[in-house]
Image 1: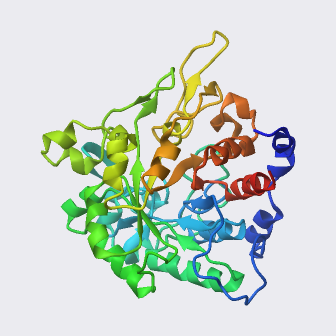
Image 2: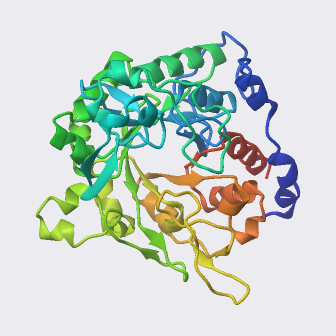
Length: 404
């Protein structure tokens, strides 16, 4: 990394004024063209900045306010995770169980139930047990305990159509293309409920005029069979997500259910698929397979650059700071990058990685509380895009990277 980039880090991490302005209902035009400017068709900078669940580090995730803030802070794409209601409407929630992200427990205390999600008995409130009319009575809340909860209860739960309308409106307003990056959440789970996601998603995109490879859309999924199905249903770009269970103290990636493989492989009964882990996708054979039905790969960050645990004795464990089943924490040091980015490019695939978070305890030791350093490492490795909870930090880092 060039030294002048490191010198610029401190200035780059300051929270842009766009955040305060947008939260007050006065969106900033940061990084946008003059109002009314003609929008170029799907012309985006590289690497892409994808607002992960919107600007979820600042506002409750998967709300129109969070998506709007991400756009105001300069994100190129916003990412709505999609689940289905009882009456088959796609809404933006991170999981089909909605207890952690809404006030459903207060409003519908008797609707808590247990469902099998990817082979795991999960007790919660599920979107699929509620009609859209009932969902619309709920309010969103911040899902992480250590983040700002002052906006809890202010925002409703948007449908996918609501998100598409917002993106279209903001594109026109800001004079720059803004993309949408939906994820089909737990496709096999929804299929067993009789509310499959794929056709509903394609129809919504078609109605919005988003039906070609050139349109600003990526559809992503951790499962493979539904991406193969989508490849026959739409021409928009597809991305195979790659998960794992954990990172071991030595930096190696570990696999355990339900994060060991795509769940459609687990239930397939095909010995070849059940013998694989998500790691197969990062092999040359796996990349070649992905290239037959998708346009990109979306690996968890450690597949590109992992980390090893450190403490005063030079060893130790890494705690789950997010509560999302992934290892995090400041007591870790980065390892040399893998060859995944170059090999993905060799197979004609884009590579977008996740998830970048700015809190000091979610950064490696080398980053010392400066999130820009982490972005710069991955930009220099050559990734084509990053999913960020704090798109303001991602955009600032990208500007520093361009200056280099």
